[in-house]
Image (cartoon, rainbow, N blue to C red; front, side, top):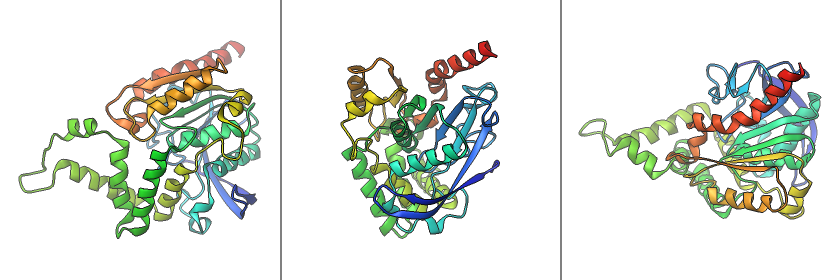
Length: 333
């Protein structure tokens, strides 16, 4: 665990009107010291954490020295969603996971940034749940984010997402082995039939044993169970259905008209969870009112998880955004 740091937040008012007397916000920084370089905020997905770079970093193909998000040029900040358990001390925080929303998380992250005296962000980027938090962060401060990059995500929870969140919640609250069983179901949302069929081809470990696909799924469940707590899974799953930047606000296009940021929407053509049709429609709507919106699509048979697999394609999409800033810094130096 690299240099996990903490910010203490007190008397935080949640969106539902309740107040949390204390929230510890844990985070990690990578690259250049704070205050010396453009800031990139990376938001983790449902089972992720702030460990984004380095030998065990879950996005180390993209973040590091001489990589797309280059630690020679940027300060990268990754917050842990409070309650994700990466700090290993959070059980008292989640007395009722239904109290929290994606908007609360975005506000908590901004509280952290303000504490760190970060007033503007070059980019906020995240996949899946992290992308939903990124949408909210950009909307909360329409003139403070230069580039919004939600990947395999959406600005709202569709009925399909809400339905699957309910199934996960039922498993997590009713199964005898909740983390393992919920993970089995989730992995079939994150991948596609084509990806699974191509990989396993109905093979078995041996003539009398499980099919390889069964072994793969069970191993995923056991691995998550060994590193993730039930309370964290319940909270992260619940947050997915709370995503909606228009809730108690104006219409989508009215909100977007006030946003100054460049918007780079990245979809996966085979995503069965945050389906690309929703993102294509968002792009079409946005293009009717603004020029600085861009749509990119990862081509993959792997489904939702392609944002954690197709690094070459994702690098090609992100390179023009981050290289342009690097070149500007080099010229200005």
